[in-house]
Length: 159
Image (tube, rainbow, N blue to C red; front, side, top):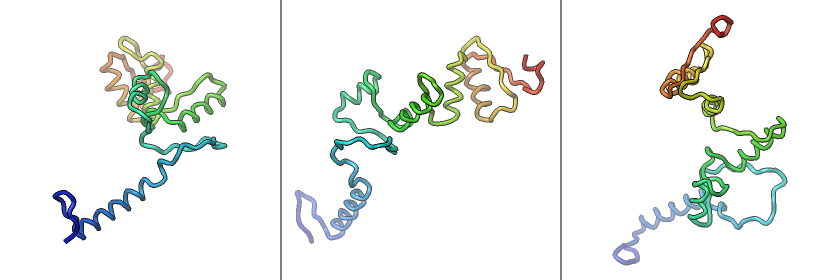
């Protein structure tokens, strides 16, 4: 029948399931928690992580709270994205650069950074990209931004 462990009997089937589970877990996670290296790569590695591991919860809490630099989720930033931002800033002769996870995130940030807020106006091309149109027509208008879509080939309409 199998060996007894507390009130649980390991049957041959459960042993096989356990063995398969171990090999699947091993296949996914083997080698990912090696010792921290005492070297630095010649070029910046690509971090393809869904999250970042820290030694303790207070460190992670400080990073989430903005009290300490670090990474929590690649959509919010990663060492790879940070290196890319530094490269773009250097190439553009700029003090800093920001990379976004999507074009729409960049458009949204550009509009807000340019001062789009209640009482302000935005003039946009009538044939702007569909998602940008939706952002302007719905979200920014809900924020109190006056949005006007114009035919940009007609200078009188743009003025």
